Image (cartoon, rainbow, N blue to C red; front, side, top):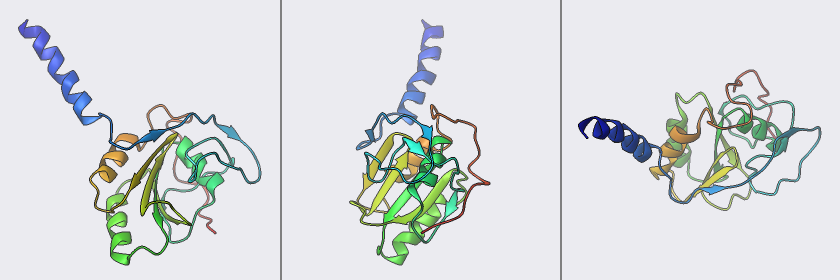
Length: 163
């Protein structure tokens, strides 16, 4: 019994640290490389058809092309999108949250339904605040995307082009 308890404890700890994040929505988009614009079923897009070019991970002050950003999601990136016009101190909080995270993209998004929307491949989370602790948990859980179509692909060396 003592040996069994030692095996159970690590499993329980792992389940707690990677457990569900309240409010996460999931989808079933299939990947494909296409040319041109894509009409996505989610806004912002959470996967599906996308450009052969990916968006280089980093911080942007202008909206990204959805087709490039979705390709980055396929590589395991996390998008941190914020409503255009939020206060500069809130944008700075998001910059701090993404600092040192090589598989994140931070950018404004036009007409965003919430102040912040976190996006990973086939996954979204709406946040009402830039200080919501779920932001860091989302990055920790989804960056470098376990189960993404192109795991281990780079998030650098792509496009830095924006609108």
